Amino acid sequence: MQALTVVPEQKNSLRLDTLPDPVPGEGELLVDGLAVGICGTDREIVEGLYGTPREGRERLVIGHESLGRVRQAPPASGLVPGDLVVGVVRRPDPVPCGACAHGWFDMCRNGRFTERGIKGLDGYAATSWTVEADYAVRLDPSLEHVGVLLEPATVVAKAWDQIERIGARSWFAPHSVLVTGAGPIGLLAALLGRQRGLEVHVLDRAESGVKPELVRRLGAEYHHADVEEVMTRVRPDLVIEATGAASVVFGAMAGMGPYGVLCLTGLSPAGRTLEVDAGYINRDLVLDNSVVVGTVNANLRHYAAAAAALAEADRGWLDALITRRVPLESWEEAFERHPDDVKTVVELRPAG
Ligand code: BGC
Image 1: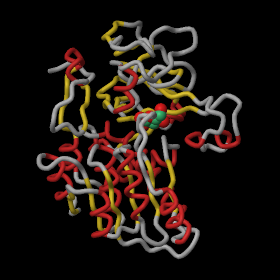
Image 2: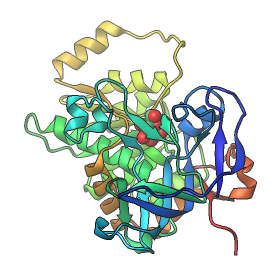
Image 3: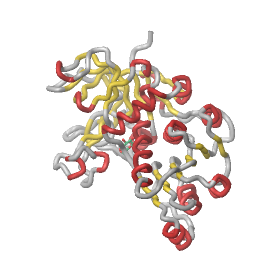
């Protein structure tokens, strides 16, 4: 099989390797890889800033946004050859901590969890891969072309789950949400907001192109302005932050209204400072009973929620989110940055 591998912490070590075909262990599926999505985490791994290989190995197979077709399945798995599946990213820590022991491995307390294609486990950027049947999520066959969006959708499904759990601590009837950032996470967050019947606003740096168009097609409003200005004008009940830009994060924090929830999903580089009126922000959060919450990863319940959300979504809209599809042999192009990129996907099956 062919796979994209890196030496973690070694910049630009990414290459296309030919490796022995994987052999499924007990309870595992053998899957033909169809596609793998590329995200900021993959770029960080390729830049040598993130990632850990399997114990005793030098190279790591990357890829955590997967899509594949089952070639071989154990009899009692509930899956059969031909099924469309996505592999779950995280596995519980071996201790396990209380959260992992209860299926909340996305909330692992000791940091010893592993992640396919990221931390301690090989990923899914391979023409064939194996996965424990319990960590494979079956997708509606009609999602074949866009099912690679499931993993980013799980991150967003978890964000909405967090917001709703936090909101449920008192009377909660949100009317509007502002999503900052119109990348894949922001746009999928906007989709799930529309599916909840909310008034959705999306803010991004892009002045034109595919992003404003995708927002409009959702029935949401696109904004190209300062976060402070948009917060004042729109007065959203909720904010989902998906830029990771510190100025946007703190602008949103300072502008929240009563009982606001600001959910942070974007990762930012450390080491940059910003002048903020911390006293004002603290005072405002306290007096408003507001919450700022960070969220990462997703558990099996979020995979199920995300699969349902994608199944309900317009296929044409999901397809338009995938702005570039790169064949495996041209993998280098997948890591280039093009101005109108939203989601870039590497196609794993041979052309033709
Ligand atoms: C993935 C998450 C993962 C996180 C940190 C993200 O790109 O979507 O599943 O937990 O990176 O490794």
